[in-house]
Length: 311
Image (cartoon, rainbow, N blue to C red; front, side, top):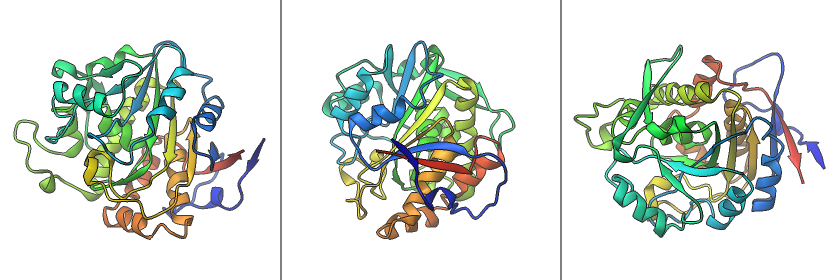
């Protein structure tokens, strides 16, 4: 049974007013494989062929990454699917393909193929149409081997972006580790400074929007977005065991065919929660709401949504 949840769907923390139709965002408070699959099947009409599941697989032993068994059960319900990742720009557990493979084993991502799309540092340049700053972004070369993309995201905080939702998952996650991620972070790939010196605030959010737009435009209607609001730390899963313990309760799962609507809805749910002080502070000090307004400006989705609660 599905019912429209009251109030939350009408909230918009960016403060921008829009008229016209609303995107559908399906939501459940129950975080388990059964409900993840149930919500996915409400939006999977255009998923076909060879399917990539973009997952943030995390640094070694990260305490907040999505539960392996939940992802395993979900992936088993998606025919011809593969988890996809790229290497990282920072020197961590996933900087090289060899280290990345070892980290995948440690974190239990061994139940299906995991395609490190920029293995051997191979890239494909996807165009950014009408972007803010970038004309193209170097993605992991294997991205274009897939017909459809499922963006399965652990929605949480982020040290630079304020929050990491579906947009961040593909904007950074599909970009190749040593070229594309440098472009998205606004640094020279041949002379990468310490991450504390990388550009931030509005500029970084706009670069992310450019990169996400390239991937969304490439897949067209054959892309869907699933945000799991569980163990919502202010830290990203890229911080591994150094990630801070969550200070707010789990919220649920939100899914949509609209990247802006689903990230907007999750942000609104954060702001509506009584225990979200730390997350709101993280979002605002990093100017994270610019992620949403940037996507709206470039027509990447609809900030106006109907939140449909599913039991």
